[in-house]
Length: 183
Image 1 (cartoon, one colour):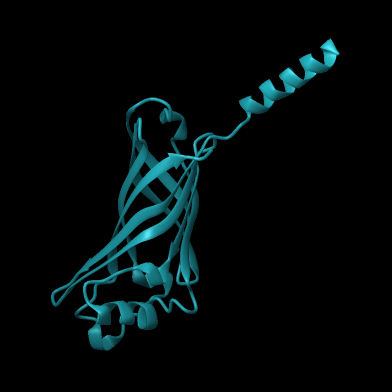
Image 2: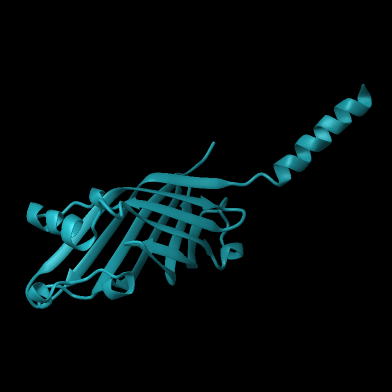
């Protein structure tokens, strides 16, 4: 009986050593911004899902394209139907990792500069991307902030000749996410 108790405690102890510490958010906010001579275009999506595995540094995002909101309903319609083809390509994803994950102390309050690298899929096209981000750890959880740019042409998003002067090929993206520990 003593051996059985020792084996159970040993097994539980070992399994907790390998337990993965994960953080998630279902309300990550992704904003994109494009400036041109004619018009400013901005979209906001506050319904994105994301997970960080603190043990491995793996990071994933899932973004529903039709959840982006615009100031003008016509912009939203054009975005979904003409550019992003959200019926055909309903979501964008990112799967990657934090390259310098060892520098982040997930259980210690502080601000950590990180580098993220992985595969971003938008409009059915997958590209490897690398971008900087910042993680702020406090008693509420983890807050992540990142700003980077992509090109529409890299993801086969065509800008019609009629509106090429209104739209820029370069899209600035800002990601804000408040992660909570998974239980």
